[in-house]
Every structure is written in structure tokens, then in C-alpha cells.
Image (cartoon, rainbow, N blue to C red; front, side):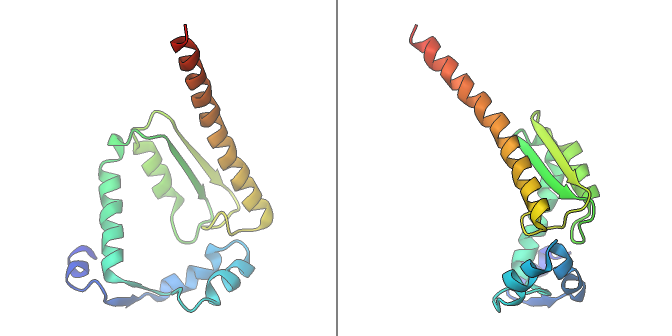
Length: 153
């Protein structure tokens, strides 16, 4: 939809009222919306440039089409109550991804911006991410240690 016009009119500013209506709800804590964005004149809450939007949609389309080719470790964090991105899309991408090591965490009561949410939701998301990294880091570190010990024999 945006791909062809985005190539010809990359700096065309598009206003979408629906985006503005969901802006505040993307933050689980309204103080984040006020401090992080509403107070910053450089952050647009209801518009975007056609060029970057076109490239974003093109990349998303490519990722969906080639999800089965994805072999990197994958961690998706999403909220059931997200007002900006449907959790169904995240679940679909997760199911399609070809990664052997993949995990999805879906939060019942968080917002779109998991790290700009209520304190308890932010802490839970941070803890989940740290735990996810820890599992992979320590297994890699153990593997590296085994290789070093083996090479010294």
C-alpha cells in the first residue's frame, strides 16, 4: 500500500488520527506518555513520513514471507492488551519462524511499550529478558569453557 508512493514521495507527511487515539494507551503508565513523548515536540503522535513507513512495511512483508528461513535465536515479548499491534501477528510470526531456539512471552496486562509501563510490568519484562539472556549466555560460556579445556589437552 505504501511501497510505490513511498518511493516517489518519501518526505510526504501522512496524518492518521487512529494512531493518535492509541498513542497514550501504548504506555501502561500515562506519565510516560506525557514525559516521554507528549512533551517532546520532535515526536509525532499521529503522523509519519511515507518513505520510512514504506520501507518498514516492505521489511515486515519480507520477514513474514521468509520467517521459516530465520534461524537466529528468537525472543518475542508481547501483550494481549496491546492497542497498537495485534498479538495474533506476533504469535503467527513466532509459529512461522524457523528458529530452533525460540520463545514467546505474552503478558496479560501490559501495554505496547513493555519498558514504559507500570513499574511492576516493567520489572517483570526486564526480569524475563534477563532470564532469557542468562539461559543462553551461561550455556555459551560453558561451551566456550569446555572448548578451551579440550584444546589445552
